[in-house]
Image (cartoon, rainbow over all chains, first blue to last red; front, side):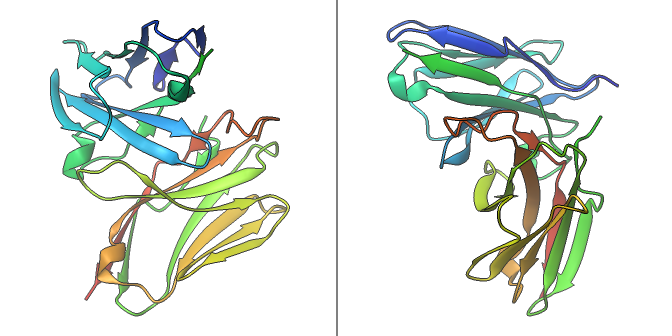
Length: 116
Length: 116
């Protein structure tokens, strides 16, 4: 069974630009969560989608948004990029909503975003 | 191919006793290891880490042990408390020159339940 895939793997943008990251969950998984990973900060939860609905949202500004399609694929968008947005963005999929405490989360390899 | 494995999906421990969570890895290039804790409805939060130059790191009730020859790490919680009930993820990485936590790979998690 194929794992969680994220594209692109690496991305370089400049301040003020916007970026869209994509995540394809494991087949059959309906929940997709997004996390930001920065050095020394660990994983920080961004949001979770289940059946095209946002279930939970972390403490990030409105510049960070996401959506989920009917095939469970998810995208996250960051507008007006700032230097501090440079990070590894991880997505994770699970059968049941992760925020509901159900199901194991399987993480993708991440997208490394560098903002110059 | 799961490079970081947590073979016990769940663990139940009496309050006050020691909780031991295990993690095995296959990639000998990993040189930095982390444990995350995740409560329902919240994203994972960083707990403790260890570099491959050490074999033990302690932070309060939490101690992580690393056995490089066995490619095994464990998290000990002593004494266990009800608030420790959560899902614990171990993660491994190959640290890049700029400490970017490149190639961060997570296990699938162990659900720890502390029985009062």
